[in-house]
Image 1: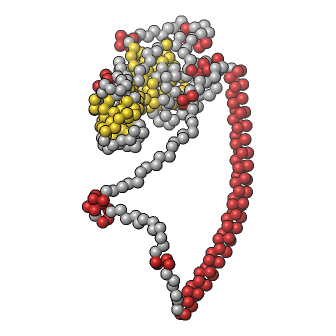
Image 2: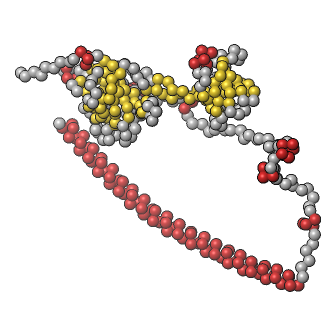
Length: 371
């Protein structure tokens, strides 16, 4: 019996982090989720590992992604045996043979090998002001100790309204982690302050070689890690619902702001274009509204003629508006009839397509069961 004998170089026996260019296969129905186990086929080896997806920003940062993009490449980092760059990769979610549809989940190519990960995840730290002194404020709730504050000294912070600031020094009074910060302008006690940071993402060092060809029962004899969604379906466990993640109606109190009052001395020094020009409402009527206007005979004739012309014009506009409303109503009825016909034909086409797809799926299932 002929045998194929192969060997591994000392470098290929070591394990580390593999970063590759990764893309979901266009025939695979669902997008892939980060930290879900995949079976990788690289060269002669097949093994299961847990990938972490990321994308490279313009500044060279590898930003964490929760799912693979729909129609574009991303970066995938996982733990496994070291392989040379430019090696092709195939990824499969499950090896069992009773899975309908296209089984190859993704394809890719190895870019580099590394001992550490460069993938980072966005983290937003939130705090609230406790005391405000003009452009300086004491912020609490963002950090838990003086050591954390010392690590973030000089970091840029912002309020929700857009005022920029900077972390200065930690203070001893108040709860632990309270610090002094300066801003461009005076902030309000109701403002929320946040600091944008990036934290490294840990790559799980999981490596499970596929030994299905060494088992008598094939793929069923090899035990693989299952994703959480598959375990929930198999054990009929309901999905955990976090009450904090449920959308709730937002109720905000309507704020009333004081009117802008400019001191008289400051207003006197302002140019005329910048001065306040709102006239106050007069309590008593002026003489202009009280006086009587007596028209002469010629003026009365002109005024009567203008009134008659305006009456004719208003009557014409009312008739035109009524005709336009009738025309729009008839047009909307006709459009509704056409939409009903189009919707009926669309539903019929969709029904035929679903029927054809169901027949094809049933034929494939019968063929799979026979062979």
